[in-house]
Length: 192
Ligand SMILES: C[S@@+](CC[C@H](N)C(=O)[O-])C[C@H]1O[C@@H](n2cnc3c(N)ncnc32)[C@H](O)[C@@H]1O
Image 1 (cartoon, rainbow, N blue to C red):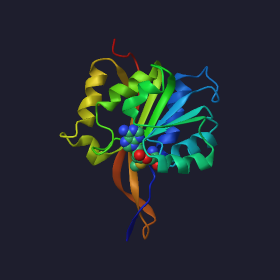
Image 2: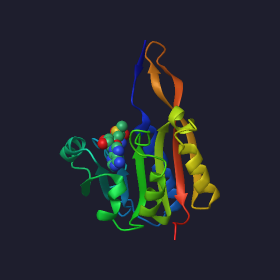
Image 3: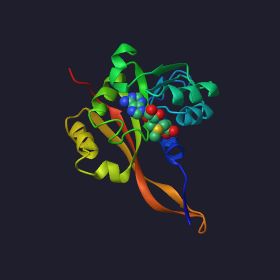
């Protein structure tokens, strides 16, 4: 019998940490300001905090999810709004890094949201996502195409594309189905 085990945060957070340490080595962990997009109940924030990152900001459009995250006392600030309204809350290039775990799906963030996200991050900073493999490669959804276009336009540079495995086979006690990607980019430049 196969059971679903939500593993994306476990894969995503170490890759984000590696990218931050490699590209922003002069910043203390306490100083690196990270935006958790679609933070939900705060799973990513918890894992970042456990690794020493404390300058964390959450944005999520669901008050119920943010209420769960708030109980954990992880984030310095929490914004209940859609990412698309970020200009009401944040400055351009405010963040050293932004992360989103399982938020890029057709019913949630669309490929154009990548443009919004890079505007929020300083040039040189980091953008990290987890996304289902089938969602990422489905041409009609446009996620892979959008990121490739941004890479080719010299706006972002791919640091890491890692296949992840989300489902565990209990009987075999080993992970069997590769089902997602961790994508880590460095921001090169914003739109003028
Ligand atoms: C699948 S959950 C993932 C939550 C968390 N990142 C995690 O991995 O546990 C997706 C979250 O994205 C939020 N979300 C969806 N669209 C959003 C948007 N446009 N702006 C901000 N948050 C959004 C939802 O409210 C939900 O909490």
